[in-house]
Image (cartoon, rainbow, N blue to C red; front, side, top):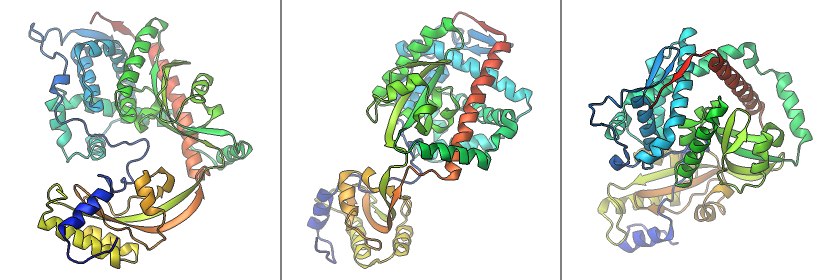
Length: 456
């Protein structure tokens, strides 16, 4: 395309027609296990009945007593509404009734964990909870303090979310104490795993996320299975796997959206491995019976150990936002000015520092550095734009309805992505130990507990 100085209306229309609506790159923070998800602005119709005619007595009914601490029907239903809000899916009385038994058991687990946290005198500072809520808002592209209003709009108390976060953070401290010296991953441990990986070069490796639903009592097996099937239906209807895992998985991986990362065949339960070997990438499994409960897994990728060669690109982008939505047939003066600035940058910039400076000068809401990207993971349109470029070359202006981007290639190299750094191996080993200890401590708490179930 010939780059011109002053913009004519047809120039914007032509550029808009050449590129997809979302021409910019994902933010580096949007990883496989932290998916950005914005719940709908209004889901009032999704709320189940919240105010019975008996003046709230049904909601205050006790459904379980855990070592003297009560769980009410209101607690259970609030958690159900939080699930609906988190997934962005409707929640009617029928679905809530199916979820209620398993939600009750999850709340029992949380009561037991909270009692253990308190017995160890572990205190979770309000600042930690506020930071966790702030992180949720950032991942969902919400303004600061917007989450409280969103919860209130859907009839969910903020305390429902705070209680869940407090238990998750506190339980991490419990496991750290329980592990003690075992939390230290030594060089010998890392070298042993590295040697094992070298012996397995060419063997399959799987990128997996999980939702683990425990069955502590065989008489509750059907409840857990019904719950797993309900969760799977929600996932098939579009609920983000990471958000559902964070809400309902009882594995420690829930803190990471259920992500197990890249794992080898001998690290998986045999029952899970049998299913994963047959699954296409992106699929969600049926409930898989494993020791201690049910697993629901999604397969995010397959590769051979030691053999994943990829082209990685370091990029910088400048984004010139529009103050109103673009009509390609009638661009505003501000939109014409934005395109003029983008054209000048595309033509004259020869290093990534200039692109960073332009992004800051434009007041862009998007980061200048989207992080290293894997070329073959980009959509076909963006891959076609970036593939021909060498370091120091910029794209033509990429027009979308909310602004214009110019992207420059800063670096380009070929890497073996299956090579794991010592730090990555150490993290994986620690995660395995943490999960093992978590399940053991949880079983011990149940064995010692006094749990009275009441009619709900």
